[in-house]
Length: 468
Image (cartoon, rainbow, N blue to C red):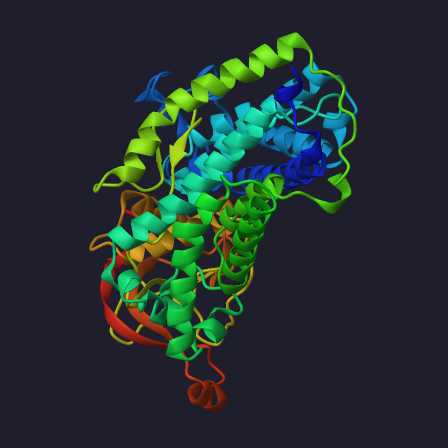
């Protein structure tokens, strides 16, 4: 069927597949390096316990056959290896059927990781990677032209991603409607980057322009993806520029990078002005793609209804395979930044004059003189959960387990941190947590003190605690 493929999007498919493989590689690297202290057999929320209280239907994963730290590590590093091979172009060096199986491997492995990841993997970009990864399985390789229906599904995904994020803002916090959210967001976002303070200190009229431009890009531009070229290309390019702005202003894991990757196939690249002749697609491939597309369109009905609902849900999966999901971010913006600072002491009993020393996290603000670092697209899962923890009135269960690990001097847990104030093998006797309000230092304060942050004590978050 001549209408089945669109050879003029050959380059778009190529850059999309290489970009997706790179994101997969980062995601598996995060899993390999962080899983033991988080969801390992002796982790803060052990995966075996989670598997024991859920079913196949609720959380399909290869680890239902068997879970061990060694097996998880093998799967994570295997995912890294396959992703690196796909990044190098292995998918175009094998037959079409083998290429589809090759793309299916990282999808199945990462689905298995996400479905045992619990709160550490409850982020919208996990589902986004899985939904995008499944579409990549259907996109083919150099043996066939890019299937039109899969290119449409990628645009449908990009539409839901951007339009859903725009709607959740307009329906959520009033500051998005009066264009004042960015007076606060750059300072209060989960993990500021090295330029976040610069963005925060921009004049307020520019913040209003930022917010207005965000609404245009997320509420109007997505509809242009459904128009003929070159308008669709310009719409995708504008979305890419917006995502690069967000990448510069903060650390949002691979959310923005993956959005850029999803937008790439919508662009008509100069090299494809004269489409290359595409060999005919095998009948089995056409049937497979069309059948899968029909299923995905059927599953899209619930996310589509969610977009139109006044009770729009954000970052929700409607099926355990994460095939079609709903997205959104920052439906509400916090006006004040709170941080939980974890401290320990060697004293036998905590007293008013005790010396308390703070643990430093890799990305989360702590030392006021330390400039925020760039980590995205790498995802520091503990640091992100610490941001959510500061919004809670009481410590979460995982945080209690985290404190116990620090009191034990657990080496795997300590590897998640930038620095421990206590020597290896000599953990503190007591640990406490205190809540502070943080704000970016003004230019005058920065010149005077050398600090990037100014902080103020709010209250005790966790009283001095020791092992029983």
